[in-house]
Length: 201
Image 1 (cartoon, helix red, strand yellow):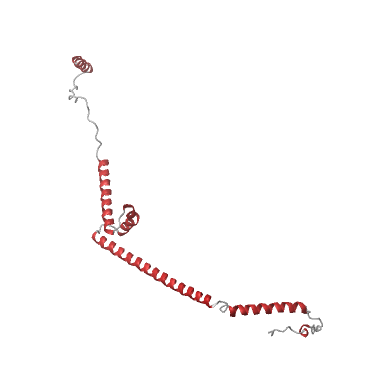
Image 2: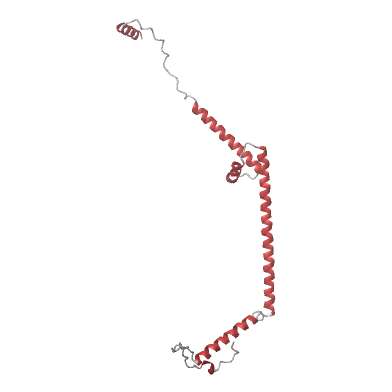
């Protein structure tokens, strides 16, 4: 490792090519001109020194006032993080408690109304509670039952109405008399009787 002094020229002097045992010359090594080497070497050393001073001076570059401000910022960040974490945890616990209470209320109301299916009732609460402004599980059950009752009554009325015969208007004309027995009469006799009756009217 270099010690900060430029290398000597002797290090870069080319040695004569050695011949391989087979009599062929080995590939020549490429060398860098000494001037270019010294230039690159100096720049590398300067950059290494700058990096070293930046690493060691990073904390020392702050004034005591800036250091106090940095400490205060770090302290406040820690406090804010703690408060936020505590708030999120409390909110999570409150939601879990609210959900547990809701589930218990649903179980209690379904124990009373055994004819109602849990899935249907929960779907009703989810989709219709805001629409009807219902806030409690008990109120939702009352509304669910009332709407179910109205629906079944409507279906029953519709079914009854469809099964009845239609009400046709009654004939406004006079009731026809019972027809006379014409079985033993000829066509001509029947015709004369009809003509006689028509003349009477």
